[in-house]
Image (tube, rainbow, N blue to C red; front, top):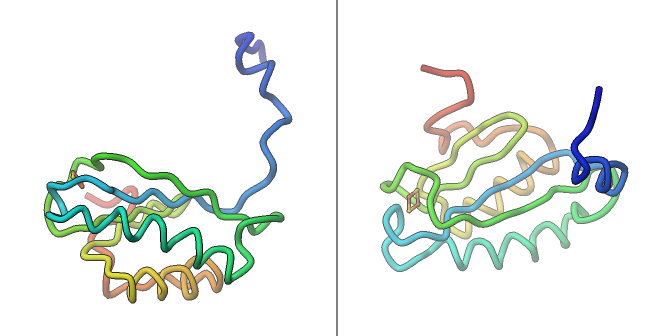
Length: 117
Ligand code: FES
């Protein structure tokens, strides 16, 4: 398949990873921008659980909005497309340990999954 020059230049540079976590740091879903604290904590938790390097690596990102804008902070995990609501630091620790490390979704905090109506 033909590639654009940009894609061709980057191909092979990305190291393997297992999941991608995106944290909303915006102020509509979580007045007070609680997502900012979560995003900083996420890095520490991933390091503690040895999820920053190797094939089990978890990539992370922050965004100013995930289009939900209530009930936050909102955190989404791919490739499962699992959306968590009301994420506290304690819940984030459970998500890292139970979901990202052990592969078991923290179902009671999920409000949507990719592909659901
Ligand atoms: S501000 Fe967080 S989802 Fe929109």
